[in-house]
Length: 114
Length: 112
View 1: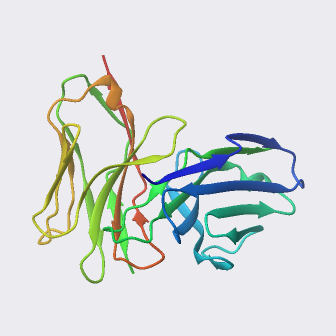
View 2: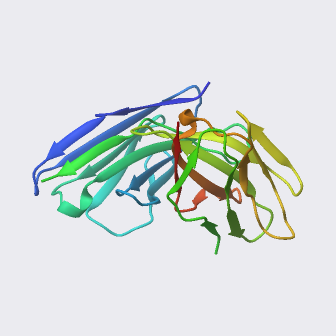
């Protein structure tokens, strides 16, 4: 089965500090990968998606960036965090084999910027 | 563009009550429709799905029917349990790489 491992689970960082969230995928090759953010009490916002190594599409201009150095690895980064970056970050994937479009999700990373 | 409009919450019910969470959509083409559930502090899990008109998705006592004529995919359960307390997201996919369009989520709390 397809699974996503995401870490760290919880992170508290000061404003202006860097960020690195990482997720890895098991059980499928050449997946599409996604980073979502969920602010407190709100829905999901798509931040980035990737259809392959080195291919990143950005949905929302911001101080975050994403990279995909390997087929099953997806990283979310920032050089300088803002207070507004606080939220729950979810990595998601879609396998390369045929399916009806559903995604599988990691357990999430809760970021608090102070 | 694609969009999903979901019943606003929070919804609070007593155990064994009937649940309906409304979801309507706008999409080009023929989307697949999904309900995801998010338990506190966790990621999202696929609850059920339907890929074409009149399909009924079901899982864990929850059901939703793909209604093309009303562009709806309402989630229902005949008798909710305390363990059903979670946030429920309606979503659609038209198969593009950009993937899912989510509704805003509905917080459900079931009281014993």
